[in-house]
Length: 83
Image (tube, rainbow, N blue to C red; front, side, top):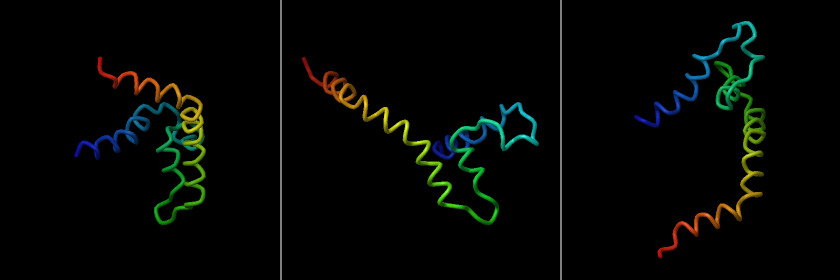
């Protein structure tokens, strides 16, 4: 139940605090889940575009992880050593 509420919250918070005009809803900055959800319609979904958008959203996080993975692993191992 908590996971369902977490998923709903990702969609509801940006919608509730959106201050723009409804006519310009497609032109405002959205969170990643809302932006990807806006690529679907009631009956169809262009999965190629959705997957491309997912990759564009994931690439900066992966690049940051690859750049800082050594420091992340060192921090995890230092914190796990006893004594």
